[in-house]
Amino acid sequence: MSKTNSIDPDRIQLLEVKTVKGNIDVGDDLDNCPLAGFKTDFDVKSMFRLEDQLVRFLFTARFHGLSKDEKPLPLTAEFTFDFLFKVEGLEEYVVDPDKKKDQFRVSSVLGHTLIAIIYSTARGIILTRTQGTVVKDGILLPVINTQKLLNLTGKANDKG
Image (cartoon, rainbow, N blue to C red; front, side, top):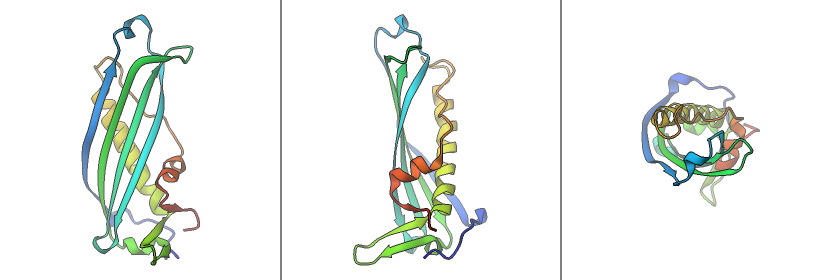
């Protein structure tokens, strides 16, 4: 069971952020339909190296353009980022280890903290990278509950 229910931000270092993929694809007839918004979906993959206290996340955001009446437009975008964290005392956040399968889960307090950092960092990068493109004002990730992203990783535990 996790030994801690709080996070000391001084024990978390964001070592690197890499853009793995970043593209906007536009069809020929986008000019005929004004862009009103996006349908957005996400993927999150997490990897842990307890012995080195490292956590890596691959975060992907996909966008599909929508018209005012929410019909699909010929505009898609996809961004994938690789985040690497060092978390001092990472083992303190491990809950429900399954040593036979070499698997474990981390407490939700750590999961929510790291996911919030990832999401807010990606939000700024995507907005900056898309401003001045065919999207004009840029793409701004919606405000979401971080539990939605944690559910995609399968690595968080609300009991922790």
